[in-house]
Picture 1 (tube, rainbow, N blue to C red):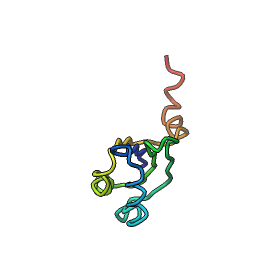
Picture 2: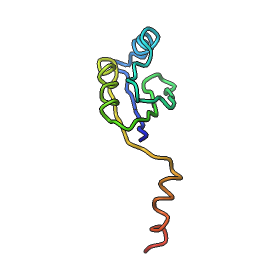
Picture 3: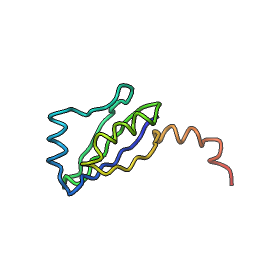
Picture 4: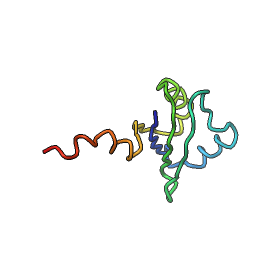
Length: 93
């Protein structure tokens, strides 16, 4: 399952986040896969896509960063997959 992870850097302190990342890496447990990330121009937020089958792995990872980052996590799927899932219903009134 894919998850959009929206991170807000606590106290707008992106440097602390990048310092820990430099020193310790992403700290993801085995089975939680990093797909990609994007950072807002003002360094206030990071948007990551993560993949795993066990939500507990995602929770363990969040616990490693929660002192520096506030998380919003949204289960997502590719738009084409949503379209395929809804194909039969698209023409219904």
